Length: 239
Image 1 (cartoon, rainbow, N blue to C red):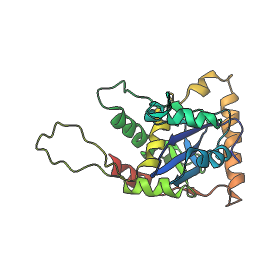
Image 2 (cartoon, rainbow, N blue to C red):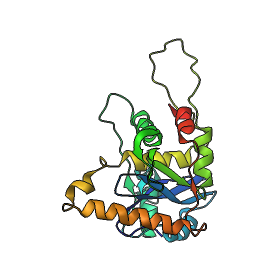
Image 3 (tube, helix red, strand yellow):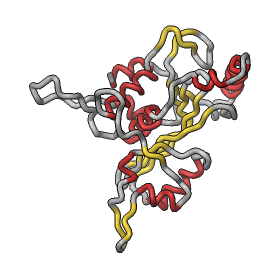
Image 4 (cartoon, helix red, strand yellow):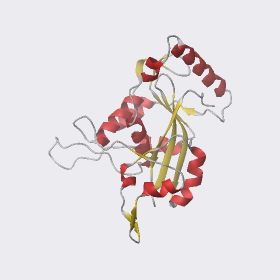
């Protein structure tokens, strides 16, 4: 069971014939992100996606979605509407992912950099379960099989132009889960903001409480099956 004081969020990537991907993210007080739930289904309509998506989602948390979902390129009579409008009819209110980067690169590349940073193994970072030094900041439950598979297969396009100054681009093949991961992580505020807002000593007390909660839930393998595989290797596939 996820501690009640952890932040919950969702990333979302809609597909028509391609898979619609949505993941549930839980963020602890150290800024570690746990991917704890997955919806990944192709070939369905919005009406068919909506019920299982609502089962996954907290109604108080709006998913961070592909900005293209908000383009009103659909039409019925004189009424123009978007994919986001369709989901809103079923009580799922999407929030557009960031469209522009604050740095001198595309928002896609900036998002990939941000995800890679969360996946990077840090010698000085405390593992949220064992408490030992040395860990990434992104952990994926092994029930999220499609996200794990997509990360393993994520690749850059091969350069065919001799101009090596052109920006690199990822291959757009089976990337729906990693896209919703990118939308969510790139929307994250700087880690540590919660700790700074708490009264003195409260952050440390909650840290102890959430580590105890994780260790207790690990006793039930059906609840917390995590993939603590070689995230450094996965990161190298991206960067």
